Amino acid sequence: MRRFVVLVCLLACTILVNANNYPKSVRKKIDKTFIKLFPKKVVELKEMTLSQDVLSSYASVSNVKASILSAAGEELGYACFASSRGKNDHFDYMVIFDKALVIKKVVVLVYRSTYGGEIMSRSWLKQFIGKSKGEALEIDKDIDSISGATLSAPSITQGIKELSLLISDIDKSKESN
Amino acid sequence: MKKGLLLLMAVALVFGLKAQEVKDEYKSIGTTILERVKDEKLSIGGYGEVHYNQQINGQTRYNGKMDVHRMVMFFGYQFNDKTSFVTELEFEHVKEVYVEQAFLNYNVRPNTALRAGLMLVPMGIVNEYHEPTTFNGVERPSVDKYIVPTTWREIGFGVNGRLANAPLKYQMYIMNGFNGYDGSSKLRGKDGVRKGRQKGAESTFTSPSLSAKVDYYGVKGLNLGLSAYFGKTQSSAFDGLDKDDSIAENFADSTRVGISMIGLDFRYRLDALRLKGQYIHSFINNVDEYNKVSDGADLGKQMMGYYLEAGYDLLHGKDQSLVPFVRYENYNTHHKMASGETANKAYDRQDLFFGLSYHLAKGAVVKADYQYSKNGNDDKAYFLNFGVGVWF
Image (cartoon, rainbow over all chains, first blue to last red; front, side):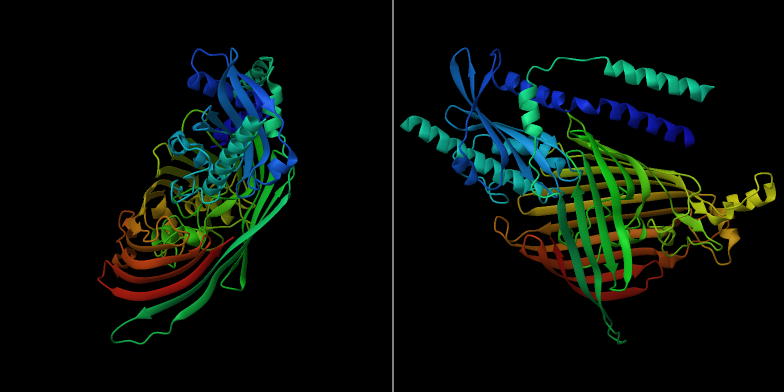
């Protein structure tokens, strides 16, 4: 038993020292997603400025950033980054939309709490693919909830719905310009 | 010498890993995502349960019991992006005050956290997820009460996290264990190791225990859990023990038992269907010596318990939920005995529950159930249970 305790302490030390690698693993996740969704294309992100009035109408998401995705001048769609609240932590995620504003993929980038992380599961996030314009995104009705993720599942569902509506608004205003 | 070499290797490993500095050109997106304007650092929540248990019998009249079984306040404080503190303060039966959790959490990486303090032992479903709106039935399952034994929490430290590329969550903690002896033996046949729980209250520590759990959630709607626990019980007989006194040490050793537990649990949801199941098995060694220390001690060598539950949400898709359910439980704290000892058939128990959970809103539930209990002596008991539960 004592040897095992020593081993666990050493493991903890190794993890602690590498603590500053926070953003790198997140960036890797984002890159991998783009490679899978847009094979053979070098995806570039161009961040859009979002006005405060636009953002204030979406209460369930914070730290929202939206970017236009393009490759070699061809527009591919949009990527939205946002945070939503879990039990006593925020979690960060990315939603990718295609040119027709249909959700192509949802990826949870950082999940901080011990509980509710089941929303990171790819098989659960598949439910969001194909939805657009904030339609059919009600938890328990259109999206199945998860045991053990009583707060995070409704929270991310609401967040994705708001991002979907936000992107529709942005797209509409782009066209009217 | 061996320990020194091991330490040197670990230090070298640590520096080796640090040496890989990769340039991160896209740092801006990564850091902006992680920038968080924290609205509130303090979060407050809680849960509560008020129960009415009524034993019923054709021939005998029984008084019922009405109890504010639990009233729990939860506080979480976020010091910074990575550091937080979580605590749960509990009033049980109105007058008993306990601390259910009190630990410091440090997110070393997005999906890995270290924690230290008073923590819930990851064994089974209910020990970790015990808010009244998350389980059916007024009381927590009997298997969790007698075999797990819930609410099981001790002081320790460890790591938990999620794998980056697989739908797996893991927890591993080194913790204090049960106290089996404080002048007299505390563990017994009726409720196994339940009375040995120290709950972080001036707990005695003789040697550490190991607790681990892995959860799989790769299939939509399914949560699978595998838990393990290994450790010897603590004993006051080691306090002030002369290391040369082999007779006293022999006695002290006989006041301890070794516990190895394994748990398997699943939760499955498909549209309105809700299924749950759990199996816990405990292997206890040195029981023959332990039972000789105090008169009447009757701790079993093996304990086991399992349950299966099925529920159906009649209001699936709406804001409210109405879930009729049925649960069958089978548990035996005298599953196997030390040689020469006989199992008490009264400890071989079965419970059958038929009930209803009506969720008025997310976080507020009214429950009712009918309970039929039977034991190995063919003694039967019947209960009607009612309760309200909240979680906010």
